[in-house]
Length: 310
Image 1: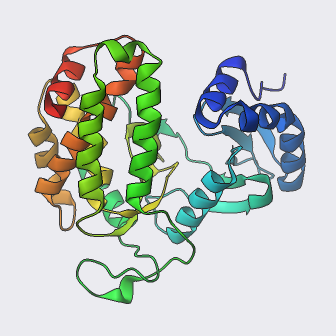
Image 2: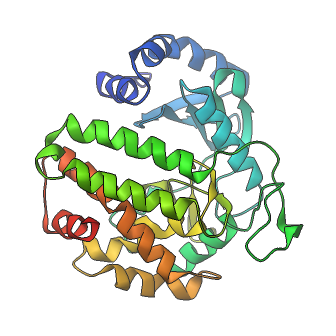
C-alpha cells in the first residue's frame, strides 16, 4: 500500500504556518506533484514524515539507496534551503543535495542511515563542535567575516538578515501563544522582552552564514563512519552563536544549567563566544518554553526557562 502523502494533522500544520489560501491548494495538488517528481527521479516513496513547512518523503532511489524528497508550498522556503545547502556542499556534517526543481519547490537529498534524531540522546559534543565550525566556515559574497579576511567568501545568492528572521519567528510565536494554552503561563511582556533582546543581538556581533534552526531534531546520526549531520536549515546572515542555543539548553532539560551546556560545547568550537551564547539563550528562552506550554505541559524545565526569560 502506498503511504499517505498528507493527512489531516499535516494539512492543519501547513495551514497554521502558511495560511489556507496557500496551503490548501498545495495539499490538494500534492499527489500529482509527487507522481511527477518520483517519475522524473526514479523514486519510490517509502514513508511521509511530518513537518511544519512542507512534506519530507523517504524514498528508494534507482539504485535501491535511500533518498529524501523535500517539498514545500512556499517557494522562498525552498530557495533559501537550497541556496544554503549548496553553499555547504562537500561539508560532511551537512546533508548534501542530489538535485532540485525550484519551480516545483522540491529538493532531492541524500538519505542518511540510520537517520536517527539526536532528540533524547547523548550529545556528541566534539562532533557538534565540528558541525558548527563547518556551518560557520562559509561567508557569503560581499560579507567580510569578523576577522576582516574576505578570503572565506563563498556562496552566491541572497540570504535574509537574521533580524528579519527574528521578527518573523516572534510574530508567529505571539500568535501561537495567544491561540493556545501557553497564554495562561507566558505573558506577552515576556515574549516582547525576548524579541527586544534577540533583535539587539541580531544587529550586532559577527556575521556569517548560519543554519538558523539547529536543534536536536534537525541533527541526524549518519552512522559510525560519518557521525552526525545537520538537516533542514533556515539559512540566514547573522551571529553564529545563535546556532548553539538549543544544544546548550539540553543539560538544563536534564536538571542542569545553561553553564553546563556551554562548558560541554565550548572546547570544541573555534572562537566560541560564551557571553553571546548565554545572551542568546536568555533572548530565545520564551521560544524554547513555548512548544511544551502550547500543549499545556508546564514542567520544572519550562519554569526554569521562563525564569531565565524574565
